Image 1: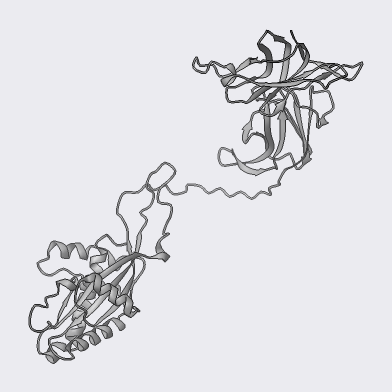
Image 2 (image 1 turned 120 degrees about the horizontal axis):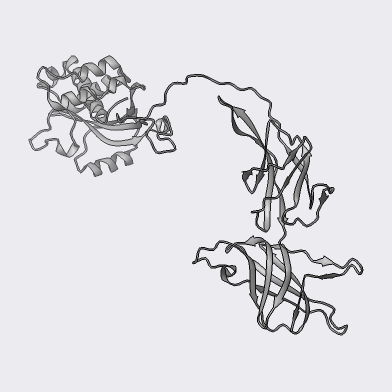
Length: 432
């Protein structure tokens, strides 16, 4: 790859190439004097004399990223931010070659020979680049820098091609140059690869290769069931409460390493049982009330020592973990106190729902709902993170007996039914 001096090195190669071509054509004998080849801004060419100089000027007017080489060797840094590669900067260079002549037809002659030289050298050979960048017998610092630019050693060869410009584009360019127009032809030089020489982090070579060929199967969960204790049959569509055992039914559930994934995280479940068509596990005691997602993951053991790696995952099934109202609900003149399982965090949204029991036949049953206080009454400033006791402030609730439900993040506690009548009868609270 080239250094940042490659742009200047390209310009010098073009100047030397054209200069040698004009000398080989004996153009100085035709125009009656030396023909100078320069690399100046057009406004710096000396036009102060009565006639123009016999001169060919090569001016770099534009440098643009090369679209084909803009993605070399990405990424350049690893996950820790350490440099692993020096990604090259790929550039296309655009030059304006302008001919000046002291007499009639001189500029046209100079420009014609210049175009012939560049036409016959569409590719700048590596040996030619080295020869034209070779420092003089007493080298200057710029000559040494250009010789060390590495232009001849970059991966891509340097190509020169004419650039077609409309009269409008030429007019705009010369207006930007701030100079008087002279016969000109534009060229594009591509591609220049500039690469930093900073130190990079290089990994050690592979000591031992491990190739694993294994047929992977995708687990499929078809049904989600649950049971309250291990010796009961699992039931579908029943309310799922804390401490329940979740039983997933499906196909290809058993893998080389079968993991249970709850809310996107693989969990440890020592009491879980696995088979090809069923996976069961008790819900973690720390699981909060509300909606959750469960799936099965098949990991693959690879490496030495064998280490689990991600394999295939099943579909995700959602379920609601219902909160439980524990013990009696108490009421004062303004506050209802409820104990819940599982514990509630400050971030959860909690409401209490009251439904009147046995209203008079001449009116419908009354119903009320109230939100928990800010942070669910948890002393966040004091460092508390959860609670099992919530206090709801209520108002304008007539006296009577009310069924109590608590809603946590959309999951609602379950009402119990009277075995004799089949009607809901608790938990309840009496408002005085």
